[in-house]
Length: 331
Image (cartoon, rainbow, N blue to C red; front, side):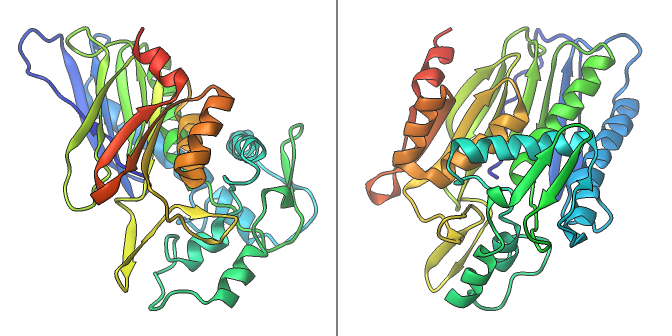
């Protein structure tokens, strides 16, 4: 997942605001609150937000062996396994995106994520063999999962299915924090968990929150485009931050379930704008895997507000938006 730059402004003519950040999910989170309700402090808010995010980690982390998801992955049963309503909602969203992308997005991708060294386990000293990739692919497939809504439960077609919700988790965390802030009477905020952002209202200047999308360049950080966002969420996925190189070739953490290998396309990053940070998070990954041709086609077909940055000749970035993206930018 790429990290979106948050653009701050001069303090002149700004309303009161609270700003804090901290670590979560192996990355960071940040919160900005404009015009906070009377009596709120950064210290008390940060403590409570950390608890919200810790609860999310306890539900969906593959890095925490005691999380609900880790315990589900360790359970080799092929009978119905009861799960919490919160975990059900995340898994159900992943399955929905899988069905709409013919499996380009797949939450059972875990064995391949781990094989290529982007999961909880250390990266292996060598690239995986064709046989190892094939063995991991045999455990992958969104249709190998069956969901039941009431009571919430999940059933695996084979006991060694390994679910990885990292492509939804940052957005899910941002949504959960946003819902909690609203329950405390906060009406103007921006919450970021790495590249997933949720906003409400306006910033301290009374303007939409300004989110800067990075150029998809691994060797430096520079702004490609600034997007004004209010009462919306967005997420960016890219291949330029989390990767390794072997024999002069870059291997991204974005893995194609169909090939079993990291994506190797002209597409550098995708930003999706939606009402839900979790939905934006999942679709950004899905469109990234689909690539620079099928990705825009899928965004148009699904009515998604998506912004693509492709690398043209000499790796020069070029951006373009889907019809829905251009429409909301003109409002």
